[in-house]
Length: 80
Image 1: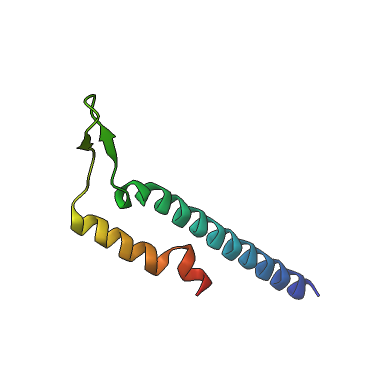
Image 2 (image 1 turned 90 degrees about the vertical axis):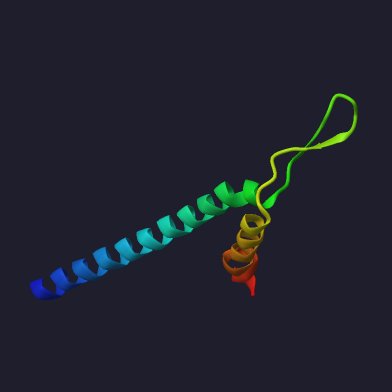
C-alpha cells in the first residue's frame, strides 16, 4: 500500500512538473513574439516640413525572416 502511495506521489509530481514546463514554455514563446514584433513593422516619422521621412527600418532579410518565423510558429499556425 505504501509503495502505491509513493508511486502515486511520483506520478502527480511528474504531471505537475510537465504542466509547469509547458505553461512556462508557452509564456516565453509569447514573450519572444512580443519582443520580435518591432522587427516586422517599418516605423515612419513625419518631418516638420510635412514630408514623410524614413524612420527606423530594419533590413529586408531580417523582416522577411521574422515574418517567416511568425507564420510558422505564431498563433495562426496553432489554428491550422
